[in-house]
Image (cartoon, rainbow, N blue to C red; front, side, top):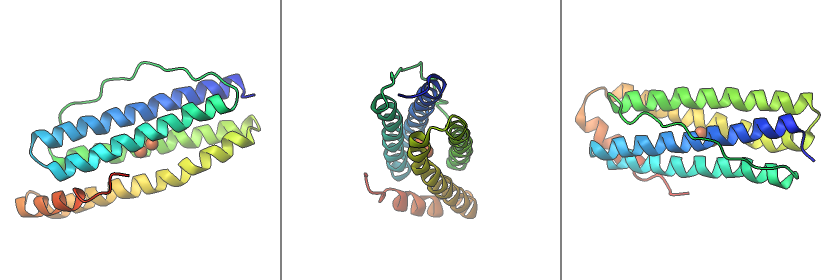
Amino acid sequence: MIDGRMQEALNKHANAEFYSSYLYLSMSAYFQSINLTGFAHWMRVQAREELAHALKFYDHVIERGGRASLQLVEAPPAQWDSPLAAFEDAYRHEQKVTGLINQLVDEAVQTRDHATNNFLQWFVTEQVEEEASADAIVQRLKLVGNAPGGLLMIDHHLGERASG
Ligand SMILES: [Fe+2]
Ligand SMILES: [Fe+2]
């Protein structure tokens, strides 16, 4: 059975993943409002991925004989100054989540919870991917600057993201 403190930390992290989902859905709504439907699609797919992450934590707590508990999900920002500003926020957010995952790994090691440590390794790998994909889009947006042609090209490309 899962340790009480570990359970609390995992439930808290599920909340952070629900917030990620909320944040990216809000970014999707922002992109929709400025008619960048490819960006909006990419963010909507991302929001669904984050929801799946939250459920992985929820399931893990239950599988270990613990009690999943749902907490208040904070409201995300609704507006950004530019597509670049939104993706810079997304990148910063992923870096923050990576830090949280690393803290959970530390706690799993300290409490000798090998099952949770093993469970968390999937997220360690996933965060490398998440940071890299957000950063790649930030770099591309910096490259095109304010040129509408470049922005529409990126929009087309992001619109082709598989729905998962
Ligand atoms: Fe996530
Ligand atoms: Fe993420």
